[in-house]
Image 1 (cartoon, rainbow, N blue to C red):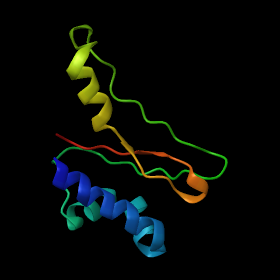
Image 2 (image 1 turned 135 degrees about the vertical axis):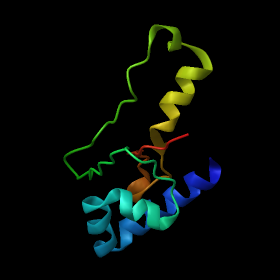
Image 3 (image 1 turned 30 degrees about the vertical axis):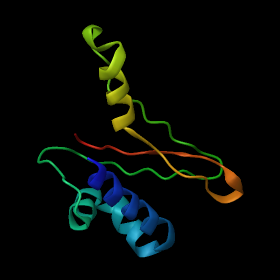
Length: 102
């Protein structure tokens, strides 16, 4: 899983500096992720959203079943769908909504 996270971070970092890559990632996320080496399971749909200065997207994990409402299962589910990014411009820490399939 760590290798997938590293690869995904590489994709996100490149998308912050390469406008054409960013456009491709938004238009064809599964293709771009697969080309970068991210495991893209068949039948999973990816949606890329872009935060702006006046819009921040918050992505929630799937609703937990009653038997999943505590402990390690809930923690694992929540952390698989949100990636905490290092501080950006001005020292702001942001959450990058991503889907990481275990």
